[in-house]
Amino acid sequence: MEWQSAQGADRLASSTSAGAAPDDSPGQAGAGRRRDALCAHAARIAALGSPFVANLVQAAWRQMDRAPELALMFDNWPGEYGADAVAFRLASALHALALAGEPARLAALFAAGEGDFDAAVAEALALHQGFVLAWMAHPTQTNEVARSAAFAAALLALDAQAPMPVDLLELGASAGLNLNLGRYRFALGTTQCGPPQSPLRLAPEWRGPSPPKGALHIARAQGVDLAPIDPRDPASARRMQAYVWPDRPERLARLTAALAIARRHPPSVARASAAPWLEQRLSAPQEAGSRRVIVHSMVMQYLSAGERGEITAAIIRAGAAATPERPLAWIALEWTADRRAVTLQATHWCGRDTCRGQTRVLARCHPYGEWIEWLD
Figure 1 (cartoon, rainbow, N blue to C red):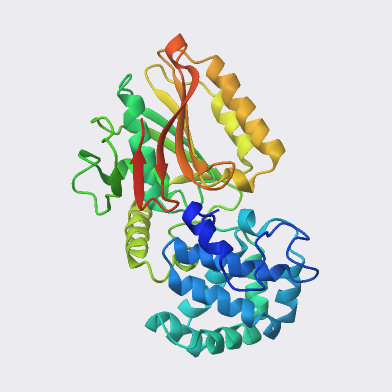
Figure 2 (tube, rainbow, N blue to C red):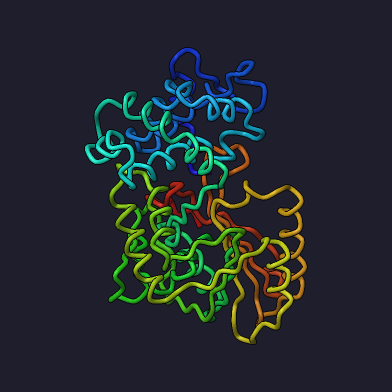
């Protein structure tokens, strides 16, 4: 997920200290020492712009024996560290403890942004191993709202072909913050859209030509998640805050603004598996003159191959039935197969030869939406 890197970060990871495992797949990090792969992931985190979190993960690796059950879990992790975002889970567990003020030394380290990482992390792991173990059992729920800018740009590109209100369906919606994208203001290169009075303005660093000018008309927005987060619940909001890098205050500011909007306009997120939920939504009647759009970001790697296949098959079936009056689009913001880049892709069906399931790579993007390189 977010801890995967671009080529420069991979090169940085390969030059990390001796003892770090370059491969985090089962059995490749040395017998009983899969935790050593955390060193490589810490280097990738630093390359992605968070030296504080990189130092935190490295300290946790060095102090792992203070929490023997946690060390056992890391050494016997059943999946891949990168795909399962284990470094991210570990760092966010420590962040959650710091936000709660426990232990005081760890909270002080987060507040200062520097200090004795090993001493603070060692104490936290020794005193709160059970909390970290429980936190690690859950997949990440970042719901990075900056990714809405990529969705907005893709929607403008679709709207330029035929302006229509959008029926938005999001997979892996988490707290549903991206479902509220129609309530955000966007600056996408020279293109601006969204309500000017919005308390949240998203202006990623823009590279390349600007997307087409237009309006965002979200008629309806629904999402699905296996464990949706209620943005109105203070404890849930704190959990989401724990997933934000502590040395990136602009991300926390975006999250805070998006949560405030979500409290006034609660997103609709169903608790269900993505594939059956999507098939049910796609089989429902579609209003003439509206575009149905499926979106997702950093989700597919968490799904089984079977569920990914079911989702793709359901979308293709629905696309085959699309017409100019009832078009269908699929927008994906995901890592490439080699996990070296994040791309924004759009596939469109409208019953014409010009849009009969053709996929366009619209942009390359920063994993957290910090920059967008428009290619279309």
